[in-house]
Image 1 (cartoon, protein in one colour):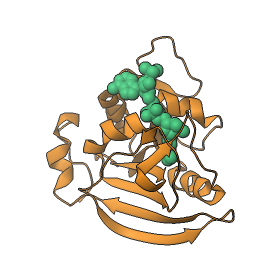
Image 2: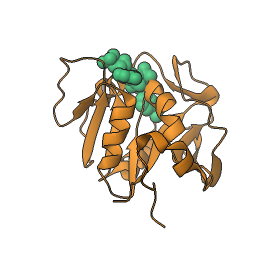
Image 3: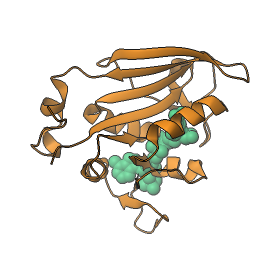
Image 4: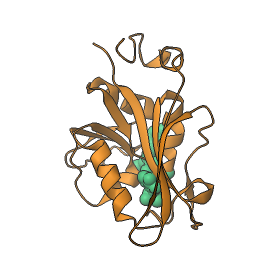
Length: 181
Ligand SMILES: NC(=O)c1ccc[n+]([C@@H]2O[C@H](COP(=O)([O-])OP(=O)(O)OC[C@H]3O[C@@H](n4cnc5c(N)ncnc54)[C@H](OP(=O)(O)O)[C@@H]3O)[C@@H](O)[C@H]2O)c1
């Protein structure tokens, strides 16, 4: 079996802000639609707080939630007591690509094992209490500038690791190759 690549998807204000008081600090319907389209039909993993923030069902093939809680028993999702257990199960779902969808704690802990980032960078200051980690080791593959109907300028970025990354960095998750070919 070949493993899918692990991707992360997030929207960031200036200064890498992604959340405030348990919510996303903006409403950009075009970016929400991009998020839905990108993850559609794929397996996703998230932190407990992001699960709580979501409030609506997503059209995905599998959902994992990382939590220390033993009593938390979400509908239509599997829970994991650690990020590494969650990532292993996420990758075992197969397909070509699997997604970590937040929040800050999950992005930070999963980024050493992540191959691709889908980042929406919003050109605006927001107050925040949760931040996306530094992503210096990733290089831009594509970017596309947009403006939302409600006045925000933002850019969709896709960034990737270099080719040598997967085997070297993902050793702890198993010794099988990450991507085909
Ligand atoms: N802008 C975006 O694209 C975006 C995307 C997603 C989320 N967000 C925002 O980000 C914020 C949430 O992020 P967050 O960093 O506060 O929370 P989070 O990453 O969503 O979830 C944190 C929770 O996950 C569990 N967890 C984390 N690491 C764990 C580990 N190693 N072992 C076991 N459980 C672990 C814990 O749950 P327990 O407390 O149950 O133990 C922890 O409280 C919200 O404001 C949300 O709206 C923004």
